[in-house]
Image 1 (cartoon, rainbow, N blue to C red):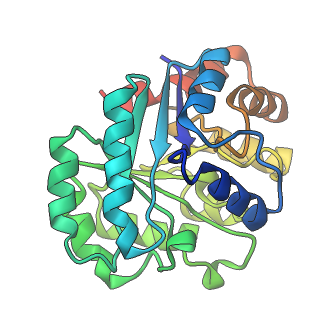
Image 2 (image 1 turned 90 degrees about the vertical axis):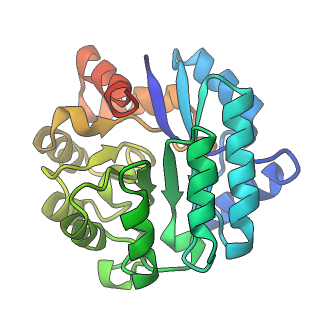
Length: 261
């Protein structure tokens, strides 16, 4: 089955505002409405049978509502695998892990930049220790700033992998949005999944090919970053820029089968 590992869909009440926030934050025009209906329509049109919808809480007070929405999405839409979220400022995180596991939620999304904490925050350590055997973590990694000034960077994730070798991690944006040379040094070749979301509009072709060639082929996952980009367009642009054969693209779109087995 083809899987889009990196998507966002917001509650209808906030979808328009959320898309406007993304447009402002990334200086672009999102192609999608940010709703689950629009996302599923685009995935079906692109031949993608499953999408991972990522929910993240920008404040501690949003943890419970974000996880409520993740549970609802996965329950109501069989095509959706929803990821919940945690926040180091939310003290009752253990109860959230219990309820998410009971609801069949398989993963957790952390976006340090938007959630306003650093990936090396020591408050996260007991969360990783408790969650590492039951959940897959997907991290937003990188920004258009030097790594030392970035709450999430390839080196911080590499240190986390050293500390928690059992942690199952997906590094968003090929391991470092606008920090791909650092990802090549710190993450490529390691036991970490890399998703392809929000890379092809910015990364140089030679650097893209180097990352894809040097990383284990079963650890590369297709992601569109909807609503920023359309899944079908993202697949096409990845294939064109990386000069992928159909078999390679199919592999990247199917690798999540083993992850969720």
